Image 1 (cartoon, helix red, strand yellow):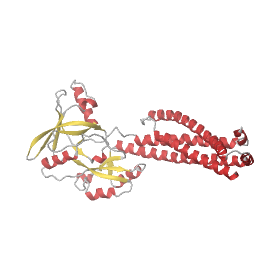
Image 2: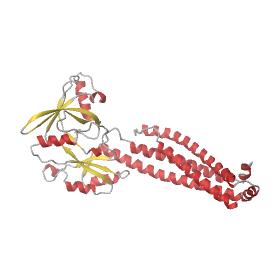
Image 3: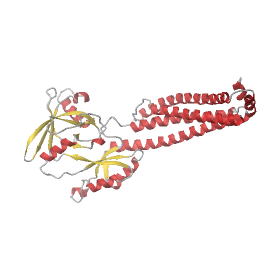
Image 4: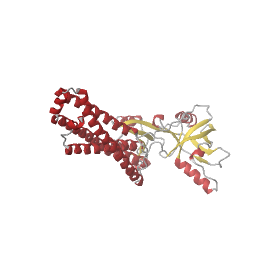
Length: 392
C-alpha cells in the first residue's frame, strides 16, 4: 500500500531510458575490464621473458662488415636507453667468450652432441618460477632454459634416425652435459638439466654465476662485449618503444614485436572502451538518482502527509532506497547475463582470429560490478534520506 502511494506518479519513459543506459554501461564495463586483463595476460606463461620485455641488438650494416661501426653496446648507451620515461629497465645479455659443446648424457637417450651458444639474462627479467635457478662453483648440475627450436632440432634428428621423439616433460628428466674449453685450460664437463623452454631466445640460458665462472676460467682474458640488451617497457606504450628502436637503429625478434604491438594496440582500445563504460555507468546512475529526486518532489505532499500520520522517516527512506536498489540489482543481473553471452561470442571470435587468450573468468570484473552496486546503493540511500528529511 505504501509503495503504491509513493510510486504512482512515475514517468516510466525516463525510468526506462535510465535503465537502458545503466544496462549498456554495466555490460560494457564488465567486458572491457575482463578483456583488458586477458589481453595483458596474453603471451605470458608460454615463454620465460617477463611481460612487455624484448631482446634487442644493433642492426648489422655494411659499415659493421668493414669494421667501421660497432654492434656492441657501451655502458653509456645502456644508460641513455634507461633514461627514457617509457622504459622500465634495461639489462645486458651476457654471452659466452669460451667454447661450449652440449651433449646428451643419459643411457635412455641416443648420443647427440653440438657446439652451442649460451647466454645469461638478469633474473628480474625471467618469468620462470623455479627454486632450481642457481649455481655455484663446485655444483655438479647446472639448470638451463632451452630454446624450443633446439628441442625441435633434436627431435628431427631422432626421427631421422628411427628413434622415438621426446616430449617437453621427458626432456626435463633427461641428463645433458656441457663441455667447457678454452686456451691453456683442460676441458671440463658439467652436467645440465632443463627447467624450462623459451620461444624468445635462440641460445641456451644459464645462471649468471655459471657464465661468470666460464668466462673467467676459459675466456683467456678476452674482453666481454655486450651485443644484446633486454628492454622492459611500460604497458600501452609499446609504440614509443618501437619508435625508439628505429631511431637508435636497433632491431628485435619479429614475434616479440608483433605480440608487444598487439597487446599495446588492443589494450589502448579496451582502455578507451573502459573509460566510456565507466562514464556511461556514472551518468546513467546519476540519471536514476535524479529520477528518484524528481519522484520524491512529485510526491512531496504524500510524504508530508505520511509523516504527519506518524510514519517514521526511516520507513519512507527504506521504501525509496529498496525500490531503486532492486531496479539496479535487476540491471546488474541482466548485464551479467549479456556479458556472458557477449563473452561467449567474443571468445570464439578471438579464437577464429588466432588470438588464443584465456577463456576463464576474471573476478576483478565481477568485483567492479559489486563496487558499482555498493556506490549506487550508498548514493540512493543518502539521496532518499536527504529528500525525506527535507519534508520532515
